Picture 1: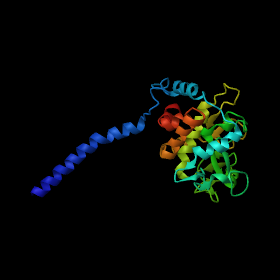
Picture 2 (picture 1 turned 90 degrees about the horizontal axis):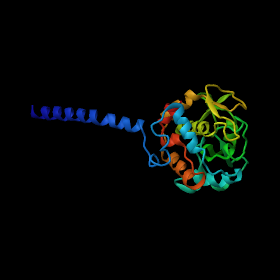
Picture 3 (picture 1 turned 60 degrees about the vertical axis):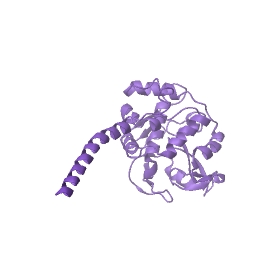
Picture 4 (picture 1 turned 90 degrees about the vertical axis):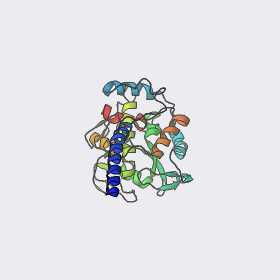
Length: 263
C-alpha cells in the first residue's frame, strides 16, 4: 500500500537521523566547553588526572577573599531568588526567604558551610571559612540539623528540609541540589591543597570524619554530580562570584566531566 510505504520510509529516515544526532549530543554532554576555555582554563585543557587537578588548583587559588561579615551581603546577590529580588533561595530547604531575615534566630537564614568548617578546623577564617563557592543561605534550624555531618544517602526526613534526609552521621540534601553540593565539595578539595597555611582538604569514602580535613562519601558525591548536572541557578551563581566577588570559578560547574577525570 502507498501509505504503508510512506510510513516505512519515514521511520527509516527517522532512524538514520537519530543515529546521526545522538552521538553528537552525547559528546557535547561529555565534553562541555565554555567561553573561558581559551583564557581562564587555557592551562588546564588537554590534561587529565593529577595534572589536571594541579593545573586547576593553580588557576582557582588566585582569588579575592571576603571577610565573614562580607559574606552576608554577597549571599544576597549570589543566591537571589530569580523570581523575587527581595529573597534568597535556601539551599537545602529550597525555600525563598526574605533577604532581611538573615540572622541567628528561628525563622532566620544564616551562612551554611557546605564543607563543614570543623572538617579541617578552619572556622570562619578568611579563605576557606569565607569562600563563597561553598557558602550558601540556609534556614537556621535546618543548618543546625546538618551540623558538620558528612554526605551520604539515607535517613529520616529533615523537618522543613525540602526533602533532605539525615541520620546520626550523614546528611542527604534534596535532589535538586545534590550535584551542587558535590561540585562545591570537590571545588574545595582542589582549591585548598595545604600550600597556603590552610588544611589540605580531601574527599574520602568515610563518614564521622570529625575535625580531620576530610568529607565523605566521594562515591556518593560523584553519583550526585552525574545525576544532577549544573542548572541555570548554579551557573549564574558561579558567574556572579567570578565577576563581582572572588574572581575565581568553580571548574566543576563549567566542566562537569572533570569530576570523573580527576576522581
